[in-house]
Image (tube, rainbow, N blue to C red; front, side, top):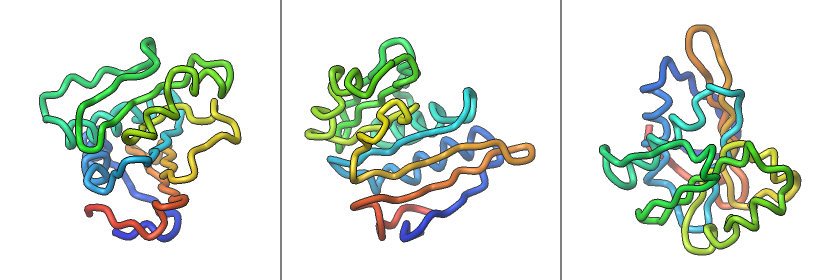
Length: 152
C-alpha cells in the first residue's frame, strides 16, 4: 500500500490494530514520527505495541508509557514511545528527549496534540476512532512519509 494521500483502514478488533502496527514497522526509518490520536481506549497503545514487537520480539514487554512518559527500545531503527497525555506544554516533550530520540531513531507519540504546532515534519498521523463494532484508522502522511509503501 502506498501512502500518497490520506487513507482509512477498518480494524475489526485489537488484533487487527496490533497487526496494523506490525505492517508499518518495516517502513519506519530513523528521524520518523508516528503520531497517534484518538480517545481513551481507542487503541493507540495497542497499535504501538504491535509495531514495537515487530521491530524487537513478539515477547517484548511493551508497557504504556503513561506514567513514565517515554519508553526506549533497542531495535532497528531505535524507537522511543512517548505518551504526552500528562504534559502541559510542548516544551515538556522536548525536555524529556523528543528531539534527541528523533536524532537517533524513530518515535511513536500518543497524544501529539500536546505538541501544538511543533510537530515533526516527517510524520505519519494516525487517528483511531470507533466505527461500528470495531475501529477505523485514518492515516495521513507528511514529509518523507508521502509516497512511502508499507505492508498490506
